Length: 187
Image 1 (cartoon, rainbow, N blue to C red):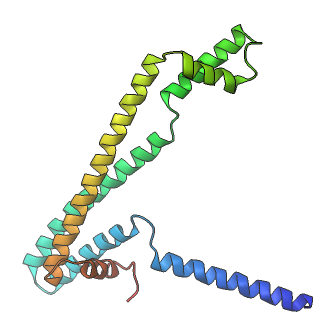
Image 2: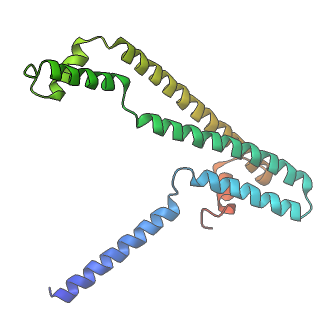
Image 3: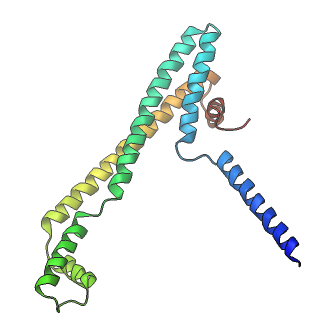
């Protein structure tokens, strides 16, 4: 195989990989994109009904759209809080690391390294305040997860109401049509 055929093969592979990535982005929207497209679909259809003179449907869709947007914003806000909380080290690990540093200063030859000292601290010291803080953090995380789930459920219910109002029945196909109306999915 000569150098030109290798280069052509490499280029065609790279092109096919780029096409695959584009297809994946188009057909597998990221988390939240579908919901935003559904909201855009509600807004666009609301305008269309208003332009056609169907003020009752337009008003009802607008109200549902506002409700859905409120729930989606709450979901996104809680998701960001959860992500931020997951990035924080636990209170026990922080307290253990601090205690281990102090132990290494006092007893420099008692432990091989900071990891061994930290391990000893976690196993042998109560760290009661830190453990209580971790319990409270886990409880708060559970509560946020529950709130996030509730916001998502309420958003889905609002979308279901919009689909029922527009298409007469609420189903997954109607939700996809709503997302298409919002410009996310192809025809």
